Length: 129
Image (tube, rainbow, N blue to C red; front, side, top):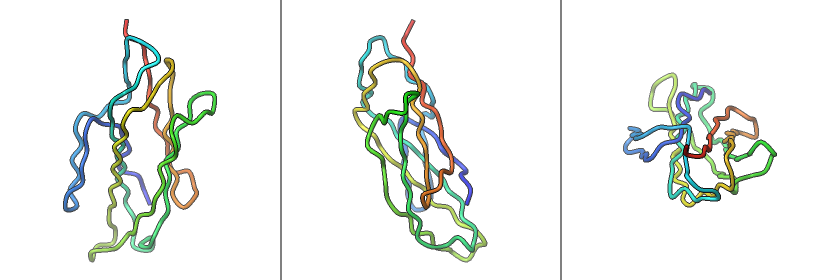
């Protein structure tokens, strides 16, 4: 399996196999700390080859530079079924509300599938000048 997209955005939805992503970013800027970011979405597009068609477990964990989790892990399963092609895609779209940040820094979102770390992306938290 391969990750084709792993990003943060303002809005995302999956509808009938089509993925819509609006406003992708990797940095949030705030004037004051601590602050709560009202809403963001995490989007993952996975491509599975024919021999990988089955049920897979996944989780997304967040870790700051001190190893602390910023929120509870997102967990679930994805059922991968073919449509007659040698590969297929699955979209994972999560909306996260009221994510709290106490200070500037970086939060890594780490994606695991079948208990193996597949990828991670950083979310940078900056103070406005």
